Amino acid sequence: MSKSPLSKAPLNRTHWIADADIEWEILDEYCKRKIMAYNDGLMIVKVHFKKGGVGAIHQHIHTQGSYVESGVFEVKIGDEKKILKQGDVFFIPPSIDHGVVALEEGILVDSFNPMRADFIQ
Image (cartoon, rainbow, N blue to C red; front, side):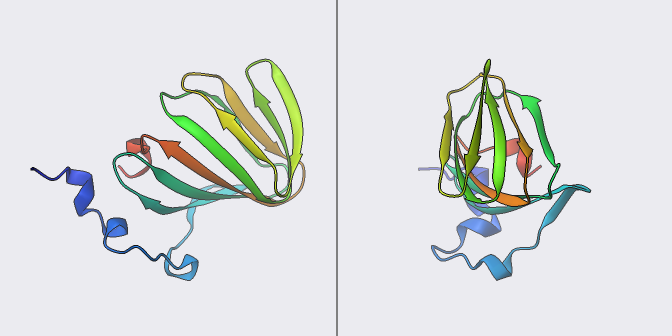
């Protein structure tokens, strides 16, 4: 059985991932992320937003589940908007427009299936 090229990635060398061992990747002045773990089928990403930070409306082929670790976010999925806070979750099927606005500083923990290859290139 041949290995996927992704199976050689450093994040796949352990089952235990310490948040402190992963550096933030700066996306813009309001947003940064940490790719916590992934394999071909699943990726977990922590995204920190300052108040006013925007995850612009977009879509992708991945199923996405997001957990609001902290903060308050206005989340738009398709034509619907909701305000979500700590402990809430949103779920996005593939190819649906979605985006967020941070109404307070906070963190989203996103999971993607399959993994987002575009995040590691």
